[in-house]
Length: 394
View 1 (cartoon, one colour):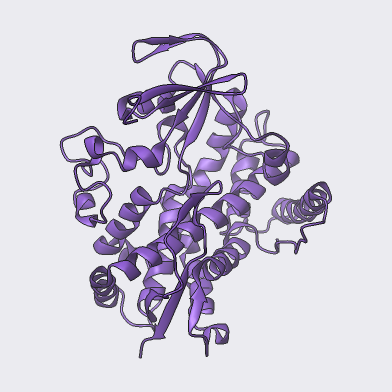
View 2 (view 1 turned 90 degrees about the vertical axis):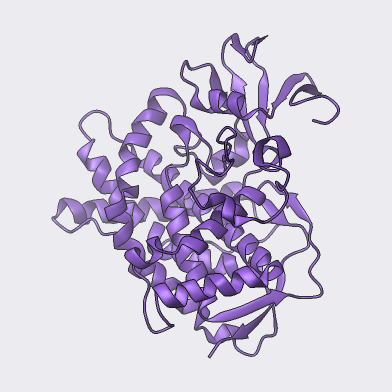
């Protein structure tokens, strides 16, 4: 950007790629009002992992989004909180943590996210153990077979009059049955969405909590202030957090937003021009890949001010829209436009619950072995792990 400006052209083999780091132009691309842009997929790997609402286009995307959205309504999310709390309590109170001095945050956060995923996303769907030499296609078939059985069993029970349940699968099937007259999702579609919920939900939340604990270890004064807020608003370890308490955690919320800004889980998104179009005074042909460097925008001093690289959660004191002051809104951690992450409220609620219960149970600091090296792989992760020292609080 310093050398070529905020719009620059590169080539990836024969593919023309244009990097666009102007927030206003990024919003135009993400809004996609006229159907000029399509998402850029990852081929076979993406099909094996998931094929859900995040990858669909056109009418299929609109139909899936319409069916899925009710599962993430606030009243539905409130019903999942006891399971959130149970998973967090299982981890922070586990004998697995006793007697250990140094912890690898990425491992612990993945453990927590898997507990939540198995209880909230798709109960009974346990992640298959894999070895590096096992064929991915075989794993994908096994996972799909498990899901097919779970879905068939749940649908049969619902047709017999059983309640849908308060997990995402039950809510999804309930909504799908309401749309089943001509425009519902097939079993294959439901399988794709289940895999998306599981893999995307588990990975992104674990990465967010990992970076949050790293940042709060670097800023112990804010760790203390966040802990005091949790104890004042929610109470001690014997009190399960509820929605009203979590919604009043102002410091915790600002911490999570600032961590999302500094360490956006998805550093960049890509769109491909579907037809000739004009953007920012430049006319592009069909087939051009537009690279939107979200993490770069979040660290741009022209966008976020001279302290753009610093942890300063007060910038979110008046909400996300005012985080850039009088400048254009430029917070893209959940994307933007009609394809903004449908699960963002779910993810934030899950992260608030996890962080609140960790804060009131432990004080933590970085281990001397920790080396700060964020790397895109493809989510933004600590390249050398995230080692911390935990101290159990009375």
